[in-house]
Length: 357
Image 1: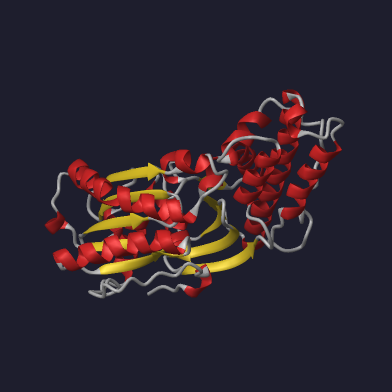
Image 2 (image 1 turned 90 degrees about the vertical axis):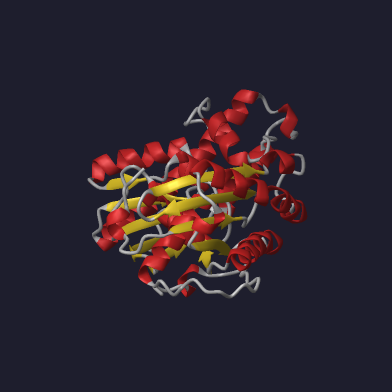
C-alpha cells in the first residue's frame, strides 16, 4: 500500500461508506498510516438468479449488511467510533434506494457521534482508487473509467480537476459484456464469464465490428457490437443458444472480447498522443479484465507510456475508494465535511459538475 502521508498536512481518520449498487463497502483511511481496514459484501449471488441487479433487493440487503460491516471494519482497525474524524459516503450516481441506505447510515452515525459528513461522487472514488496501489501514479494522467454503467476517457490534473475527453454514446463497456454474455447463455455477472470463455476461442473465427475505432474523437459506442453478437447467434444453424456448441460459443466470445479490447486500447493510445501525457490510469470493474490489461500493457511497451491499475480488490465498488476520496477532498478543503445530516443523494450526477472544492 502506498504511503501518502506526505500529501496530507492534516492528520485524520475518515470512514468511507459505499452502497451505490450491489456491493456494500465500508473502510477506514488514516491520512498518516494509510488504509487501516475495509470490509465488503457483494450481492452477486443474490442477483444471479434474476440475471441482473434488482434495485429493491439491493437496498434491503444494504440495510442488513451495513452495521455488521461497520463493526468488522472498526474491529480490524482496532479503533473506536470516537476516533473517527469524518464520514464520507457515496452520494451518487447510482440506484436511488441503495444510495439512500448508505447516506442514512453515514448521516445517522455522524449525528450520533457528532462528526461531519461528506458526500462523494462514486466515479471520483473509482478515479482515485489507483492511488491506493503500491505504485500510485502522479498527476496529471489520462484515466479510462470503464465499468458496467460508465465508459469515459478523461484528463485528470488533480483532485476535482477532471476534463472529459470522451464517453460512450450508448451502452457502457461493462454493460456490453453482460448483455453479450446473456446472449450466449452465460451466467451473471457476464463480464468475467465471457472473458474466461474467450480464452478458449479462435481469434480468426468471428471478426466482429470495432465501433468508432477510427473516429476522430474519443467517444465510444458498444450497442452495435452487442447487436453483432446477437446477429451471429441468430444466424447460427441451430437458431437456439443452448444448441450452440461450446467451442463456437468460445469463438464468439473471443471475437467480442477482442473487438471491445481493441477499441478501448486504441482510444487510450489516441488520448495519450493528443494530450502528450505518458501516464494512463485504468479504473472501474472492467479494469480487472485480463485481456484488456494484456492489450494495454503491450501498447504501453510499444508506445512508451506507463499504465496503472487499481489493486484487483479495489476494481469493483468498495468503501476504501470512498474513504480515500473523502480524505483527499478534506485535504483540499477541511470545511468540505459538514454537520448537515440530511439524506441528500444524487442518483444522476455528471462527473463534470464536481469541482475542486
